[in-house]
Each structure stands twice: as structure tokens, then as C-alpha cells.
Image (cartoon, rainbow, N blue to C red):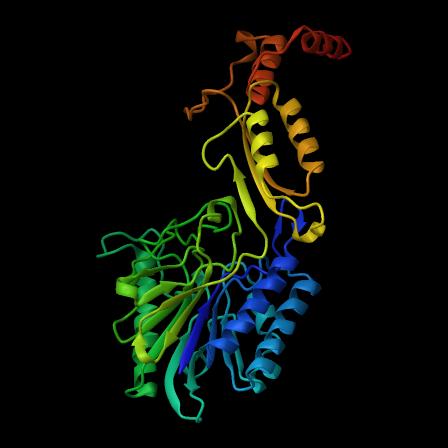
Length: 406
């Protein structure tokens, strides 16, 4: 029996205003091919299916068309999809009645009854090709503060932070109930959170905060769980000896992820729960220029011209570039020149940063009082902060003209 673990699709994401629909279509086609070639029985999607809580009709169409394609490739495929912090939890669950008839289980919210969590809803039996139940999946969606009853934010004196203790107690309770129903069969859990020790990336992962905490130790998942399929961190990585794992995002969602080896994780039950990473092709090249640090616009222009760029590539498939420039003249001038340079090439601008020479992080000082400065001094200060250079006589003349009109 083979299980495919994936997460963090972020369907509907845009990059500097550019749609990424083409990349999502290519990824979902690659995923369908993996389901076929690896003879996958179960697909786990551990949250952040969509990029925002109000996904467009096109983003939803893409998701359900993909599910239909997976089921055409393998009519017996079982799919379990849980929500992430980006997802509209209740909207994700809305078509549940129809999807469940097709073997697709969607859990966007933690469902409770009079006696606590509705374990019969969250514990899903999974069958092999012969129809025999081989294991269960304990599907836990993204947890919000309301899902942790008894949580006292700011409480002190405990053995661990209050949020960690509450999350641990919830998983222990659900795991204990799952063990009773699963008997001796293995249990896989799903979740969407940050585990301490996981490598985070900048730009696309929001820090999930409850009471000021954003990470919990991986041992909140009881030993009874054979494998924990997580979403939220976009780099594929294993914790707790491989038992707790992030499959990562399908392709770079920010500049920090350009160097990641994106893909999905395969588990073969006949060979234990040892995760195997399956790389996926990158639909669109993404470059950061320079690769590290900052450079002048002239140097970046040379690097751009050295890329293998084809003018015949359709606009929606053209490479993305992030530019990190040094401010050797007014920033507005550099930005205009950089955008003109990009517009003349078959690439798309994903991000532009311009850094002033010798800039360092320093504590912010309160602004001077009006009695200690003048409007012209403030203009001088603001211009230098914005452009990295002092205003020239033409700028000063324009400022004085504007000031005289007040």
C-alpha cells in the first residue's frame, strides 16, 4: 500500500501581480503522473490548498479539476485533505457530502460533540487494493485558539508554555481515542503547524501565533502515531528521526525557496514508514540576481543577458527574476531603469529590492521636534532615507517652490 504526502499548494497565489495558474496546472499534472507511476493508493494533502481565505472561482475550478483527474488516473484512490492557515476552512468543507462519495475526505475544522472531539469523523480508515483496511489516518486541520479548550494564555508555572501544553493534550486525547478504534493497525496523523527545529523560509510562510507562540516540539505527537504528515513549512524535511515530516511546497513560492528541492513524499507500507522524497520538475525557472547579496544595476543587467532566455516563450511561462540592487544613485531612478530593463526582456519581475550602501540595522530614533529642526532639514533627511543620496540643487529648488505655495 502506497501513500503520497503533499502540502502547501497555495493555489491562487500571485507573484508581484503575476498569476501562477500555469505552474499549478503543471504541478498538478506532474502529481497525477506520480500517482500513476508509483501506483499510489492514498493521497494526503496537509493544508494550505489555497493561498487565501477567498479563493477565486478559477482557483476552486483548478482544485476540483485536479481531483477529478487523479480519480480518473486511479478510480480507487483515497484522498484526505485538511485545511491550513491560508485556507477558508468551512468553504473547503462545503462540497464534503459529494466528495466523500468519491473517496475524498475533507476536514477544514475540528469537529466536536458533547463528549469532545468527534473522533469518528477525524479518524479515517484506509484500504488497500483488495479492500482490506491497512491503517487509519487521524486528520487534524489547522488549529485555532478556539480549538484548544481550557487554554489560559499567559499562564505561567507549568512544565512547558501554555499553548504547547494545550496542543499536546489535544493530540494525546485524539491519539488515545484513535488507538481504541484502530485496534492494532498503524495510525498516521496529519497536521498544519510549525514544529521546533524545522527550517523556515521567508516570504510565504506566515508565523502562526497563538498567545505569542509559533512553534511546538515534535514530541507533541504521541509515539502511537507511526508517521505525522505535516504542512506549513515549505522545505521538505524530517524531524524525530523521520517520523514527523514536512513534504514541502510543490515549487518556489518566494525568493527564499529558489534553492529548495521541491517535491512530494512517498510512503510504502510494505517497507515500513521510511519517507522517500520524489522531486518534481520546476514548471518555470526562478532566478535571484545576484544569487547572494546586492549588485549594481549594470552587473545585474549583464547577468540577465547571460541567462538562456527565449523570446518565443509565452508570457505566462516566462522565467521570474528577483533583483537585489545597490543604491548608487537615487532609488526612484534605479527602480525606473530596472523596470524598463525587465520590460525589454522575456522575463517577469517577481521582486525588486534596492539597498542603500552601508545600510545597517539600527534602533529607530524618535523624530526631532519642530523646535530643533526646519522643513528643509526634514526634507533633506527624508530624501536621503528614500534614495540613499542627498538631494541635488534641482530637488531643493523644487521643494522650496512647493513650500512657498503653502
